[in-house]
Length: 204
Ligand SMILES: [Zn+2]
Image 1 (cartoon, protein in one colour):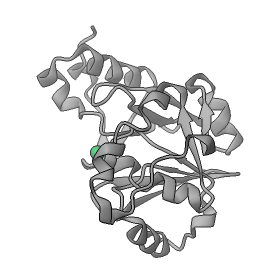
Image 2 (tube, rainbow, N blue to C red):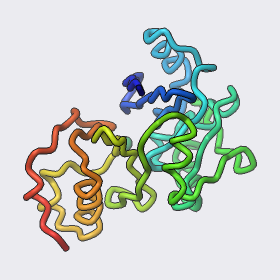
Image 3 (tube, helix red, strand yellow):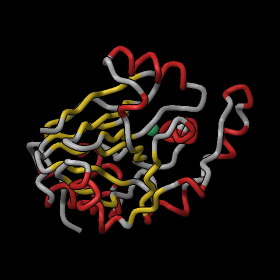
Image 4 (tube, rainbow, N blue to C red):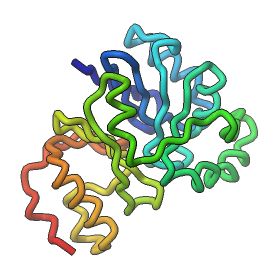
């Protein structure tokens, strides 16, 4: 059985998924939040050594701000091939915040994972699920979909907003979640949502 732990130590909800063999963390918060991260881990009786892998839903500053700090502590950052060219896109924003001790990702330390092999990688962690590309908020956005029907989607715009955006890329991403039998969505900034009305997605 996998267990999900929600971490909130700033602006972004981050999720720990404890698999049978390995534990993964999905997302971090802004640069400078490392002390808050440690405090929040402690609240859940977890230690940094308990986390094996870090995955990022998309490389915006409020999701990858302390990624390299965590790598320095021994967590392995797993970058999907679809995300590789985006991992430094937020560096210029974070480097302006000098006092936050931002560290850019060290490319030599990442694990590069073809997104098509995500199911196997997760299975080796003792987690049944897959990772799919779900652009719309950003080109590098991915969603982590568990076979239980739970999905961790980062900043994907909620289903109610799909019609408003009228963006085929966003609609397509929600279609992918539909076909993956997603039932419950965990966002980084919105409340969790049980998806019951798929008719809001009009095929493109
Ligand atoms: Zn965000």
